[in-house]
Length: 315
Image 1 (spheres, rainbow, N blue to C red):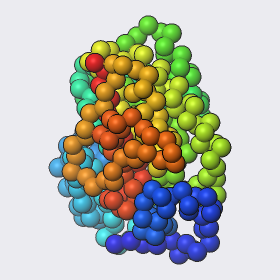
Image 2 (cartoon, rainbow, N blue to C red):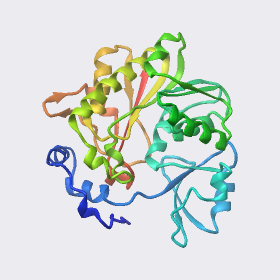
Image 3 (spheres, rainbow, N blue to C red):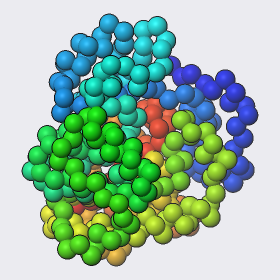
Image 4 (cartoon, rainbow, N blue to C red):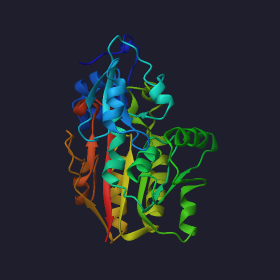
């Protein structure tokens, strides 16, 4: 059941935003969901506890409903209305991670395995890094990189709390990995983006939306994706994701890689999740035909954030 912002009327979308998104989706439904509170969700940290054990510990005070696309994920609601999901003994002990349900998808799609060499190229604050470490069962090596030191502080604390011991944290521009001579089995690029999918938890995004800033972000996203592709092993898997709903940052970036990398192919993502069709053409730009395999999530599809995920395999 939707819980609209009590002051929803004060958030005024820019005319250009309304015009743009009216071309992309059902504007009124999109607006209704975007101006409603986001359901809280958690992911059980299997490095420290089993799913069943965690459910039993929380059962007295919290109602849990499974997240269909992540077996460790649950939508969570307190039986008496508490909202501080991060203020429990179980959270302090690292038994679960507070994580938006849609953001659990990229690691699931990447399919990390124990013993592999994996790169999380833009890792902070660490929700997906911690999920990958759990999938790897602390076996193998996971490199978690970010470009901002203050963001890495939060990443380090989160990794300590959940008991991740196979993670190497690095601080540098992602493009520098191309000079290291290392090839990875799998790479997650949850790219820096405009965050237009996160309006439900960060309404200020409505005011910050700027087409010129998006163009600058696209250049960075393309550079990071090309770097990631260059250091991926043949036969390896790369997942590109954003919390943006902008075609330029999503299908446009993937189309650019497919047009320039002959060894890149997209794969369909099979998950029990409702999603909109990928954008194959927008404002006169025709994207590569294989962007049809991309997973585009609108807030109204599953009552989550907006999100975008693509699975790429190197031939």
